[in-house]
Amino acid sequence: MSAAHPRDVLLGAQASAGALPVCDHYSGVAARMEKSLRLQVELCEEFGAAVMDVTLDCEDGAPVGGEADHAALVTELALQAPAGARVAVRVHATDHPAFEADVAHIAGRAAHRLCHLMVPKVESLADVQRAVSALDAAGATVLPLHVLIESPAAVHRAFDIAAHPRVQSLSFGLMDFVSAHAGALPASAMTLNGQFSHPHVLRAKLDIAAACHAHGKVPSHNVVTEFKDAVALEQAARQAAQQLGYTRMWSIHPDQIRPILRAFAPSSDEVHTAAEIIDQAAACDWAPLQHEGRLHDRASFRLYWQCLVRAHQTGQPLPDSALRWFH
Image 1 (tube, rainbow, N blue to C red):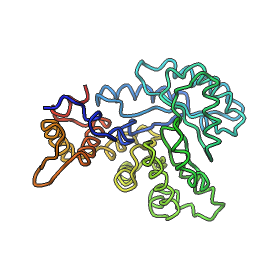
Image 2: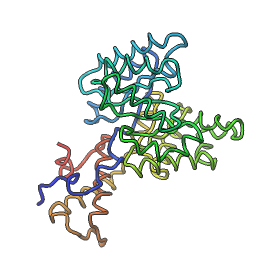
Image 3: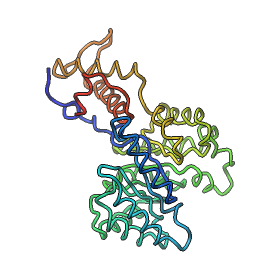
Image 4: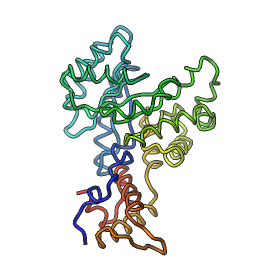
């Protein structure tokens, strides 16, 4: 049996599908941010993997005039987070008066405890470069950027934005995108059902996902505001994952986390098949093989390996033959 690891053999196997936890949980109020960090630890212990990021929010969390105090608060929370925690911060947009101070204080003090910095309302490569320059000035020269695409112009430039080497993920800002059309799109395009049926919104989602996959970045699906309807939320998350190519999704309430994990997780049958095929492939040194009457080679091996990565990222049980790849 080959001792080589699938990620080393299957070129391209480290694509965006398994690069980040599938749930990105946002909170901006002090008590909720602290609760989110505790919940992250609990879920990591329960699932045996980091199944969510916690993003501490300055954009929506900071009161007007209190931006500096809020930046100080999220910095302290990031510094006090448990070792190994995946904590990020959403700062203000690059054209906001508090942007430079946000980055200087937060990244300047806590970059070593952050997994990434989220920048909202990115319109162009110039906005990305401004964020990179601010991070570099703060000494955070390797901290990845996540960007929020929220306008028709930004969607138009999504491929160029995704190509930047510091950009790790693109998220879609549904409500801002709809309102950016100056009343040309109805409010129903923001709803749970409308966002998957309105052609302008659907096209934007597909363009962002395509831009990410073209450049090996992570497409992150927008928040669903109807957080009390867990069944509908899970259905929306599954549609984003299975039809639109998203590999990550925002959560704004603890009740949304588990439905997102379920929706983005492969089924037990998929995991079983993937484990069998990868085990057989390793046993024959990754040469072509047949499994249940179908021919497989490295192209399909990559797909099944990524299925196992998604299972691990969502805390799904793995057969022993597959677990060995994750130790």
